[in-house]
Length: 251
Image (cartoon, rainbow, N blue to C red; front, top):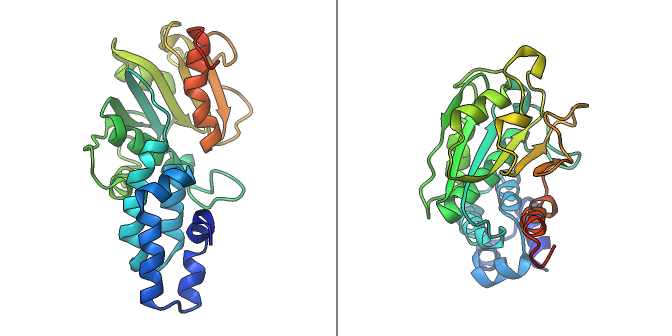
């Protein structure tokens, strides 16, 4: 079986009673750095497999594979600010039709993974307020994601994107990522102007995980981008968009 097929069938192996000596061979392949590189799987694929497979015999291999998969994330120079919406609506339902993973957990995977890979990421959760989540390089991404998700509710249950950006944005941040369902306070409330919370020369990327009818900022104008959902393909767009702004190849 190919790598992706193995990853998707771990629960089936357990249900079929695959013996331990066979499971060890599967686990070895899953954790092999070369196999992970060839698979081009992004980190959340391994967390999804970890959650779907009931047996602990896959846990160590999937955690190792997830750490190896950080190399598959695009290279992003400079320091990034990542804001993950931890409001109540982000903890219910799946972030796509085919996924049962909650939106906040899917977003946390990317935030934690980028922080673990580069060390040049400031990761915050936000709702009515903000909290900073520090990720040690080289640690278990699965455990860090679990620790992040357990902090849901720590700073309330609203969605104040603009206030959260203003509270965390620094001069050395070269881009801002917001993972949210975008059901935020509108500019009419006085502090909800997301567009102008980020300087125009700093790219703002919104990942809309809820399909809300309104965008939270002026997406489609200079340095303002919104993606519908969160997939490997959308995330690979980021370095291409930035290369285009600098008139570099590829663009």
